[in-house]
Amino acid sequence: MTATATSVDEPEQLDPQSAPASRLPRRIAPAAASVLSGVLLYVGFPPRELWWLAPLALALFGASVHGRRMRAGLGLGFLMSLGFLVPLLSWTGVDVGPLPWLALALAESLVMALAGLGIAYVSRLPLWPLWAAGVWIADEALRARFPFGGFPWGKVAFGQPSGLFLPLASLGGTPLLGFAVALCGFGLAALALRLKNVRGVRDRGLAVAAAFTLAPVIGGAAAAPLVSTAAEEGTARVAVIQGNVPRMGLDFNSQRRAVLDYHVRETMKLATKIEAGQVKRPDLVLWPENSSDIDPYVNADAYAEIDKAARAVGAPISVGAVVTAKDGTPRNRQILWDPKTGPGAVYDKRQLQPFGEFMPYRSFFRIFSKDVDRAGNFVAGKKPVVFDMAGTRIGPVTCYEAAFDSVVRDQVEAGAQILSVPSNNATFDRSQMTYQQLAMDRVRAVEHGRAVMVPVTSGVSAIIRPDGSVAQRTGMFVADTLVADVPKRTSLTLATRLGGWPELLLVAIGVGGLGWAATRSRRSGSAAG
Image 1: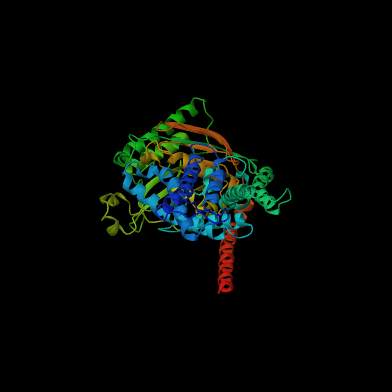
Image 2 (image 1 turned 60 degrees about the vertical axis):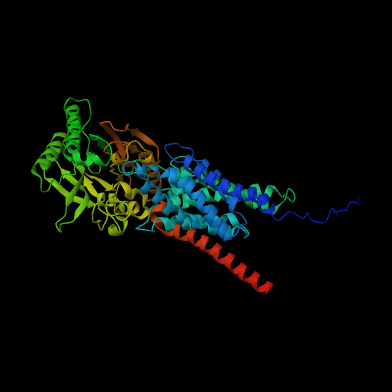
């Protein structure tokens, strides 16, 4: 027998049947890493305050899609999105089952997957972490507007209610805050990839990657002194009422009168303590969303109960009510109730929740589930309204609206000295939803330099300082009252003054990177031709 020699320079010839098996681990690894990055991003969100997990998660995802084709980036982005959004949005299925929850997570993941496509496309460019961070913010901007008016839940910024990056919200709002986290994460990915092929201690690429990683951290630390809690116009003593509900879930609505009675009862308890000298009289009282689902304009009993509570406590109350407007349409309304003159100014919720407060394409979605008929037919309000409550200007932002940049900013620009986010989370049981929403409120406090009051029917109600820290909070599904002296502020943060411009600029960075990548691709194709 004679042996056939094989040159060491000649590539080994593999059996065609074994080739796919050899490539399988290389395909599984980035897919598994992408799912893991999504899970890590979720774990960093409230109620866990692990804000530092977000840049690590994005670093893992950036390394997974780096240098890959757009199709691969799209698929890996979809896997990452599922790992993040499926657990994050689990609260949406608490009372209606898994189908709406998984459908929402799937739809949002499809939109979020576009970020993976874009990041893969720009990852071959010089300074790729910069363009990738811009692509991430562009995708968040898209999700905040499409479909059905958008669903910003899960923006990276909302997972940063504390930590080093948070002060950046006062400079450029949630877009800049999210961009900083993404830039740090993708910079970390570039740093790790570069370390595999270091060309020397003066490697320029290594220095640039390190700069991208550290710049957001340094920027957050530098912005911290700009966040103030000073009482520029004195303070207001605010009472936040949490009356609780008879039972959790969607069925709580069948006990509408009991919910109203609970909030009246809790307010009367406060009035008793005031009369006994145990508590100083508040300047104003805030009730949550849906605290009176009985229309007090047409129901004399409801009117009398609310009026009794306002007179007893001796302060104006902001009442969350479901009413029928003069045009016959249902409204989710905040009513300013004066102890002497009764109902006055009103604010109608402007950003309504699709599939909850209104049902888009109802007849179509009824094919899949009859639960669509449980959605309301509410009509949105058209303008911001600030309540003058005993000399304090309160800006209502009703529940779901807190997720939308422009809605909150409108109320501050209209003159709000304090923000109020009346909410009703009883539908979602003891899920993480209430903590995720509370984190949004904390970010908004820093973004606009305002104290934020959070009256919730069943908890968690809270009083948030302008620096995002929680001064007081309640438990869940208990009746409770919070009373605090809250700073009134009138100065506008840079984020408030700039409005939507930071988001526009950061989206332009992402679009510019995509444009540059497309130009390079065409030139490469032309050169090859």
